[in-house]
Length: 311
Image (tube, rainbow, N blue to C red):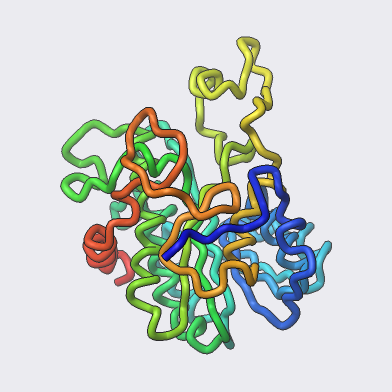
């Protein structure tokens, strides 16, 4: 099958991608939708008429969005807490047209675990979203042409999922390796859903927003930010040419969540509003989706690995 091609590029904004798209009556969830890329995603979807629920650990932070758009709702959700995920799913009523798995944490400087002992980046970025998708599958089934979008990262090019030591119990903790494998897992989640839930009419795709200044980078030290070209020697933020605005970063997410241009597309990875080329991952590769990130065998194995988190 030929890759999906759209008329949008790296500088397209979320509003431009949804221009002319009418989402009235559509119900969507955006995790981590109270700030940064999540908030821009919520704004674009709500402006197009969707009823959007912001699922966040900090409901108070989403009050301004709810005040801006009458169709925006706010609900508490801690993805790293299985009980919180179960409560959110049990409270949901009616069909769900799209789940946007956007929330995440990046490069925690030290190894942290949740109450059940799961490494926190893995628990937040992948396991919580896995449990959320499973808990909401019935609601997705009741919608017409339902979709799941997992927000990954170009970091998936750097590391496959380490099934031998995924929680850094045997080897020293590496903040970037933990983040990278969690984002590989995010793509594998979309692949797994695409394979397993096609019979229910559910499609799933993953995307990379690109380089953007958001709260996600709050754990990065100055040396790392300087290596990215995003900070000068005095600690001032810089915006290199390859960086996007939050509105540009959210464009690929809303493309997958709501654009008719990707209707029926599933199990794929998009960047800069285009379906990405499949490549061999590695430290020098700057674009595309790594073969390990879309490996169906790894997707099935990861699915089984994540089931104990659901409980």
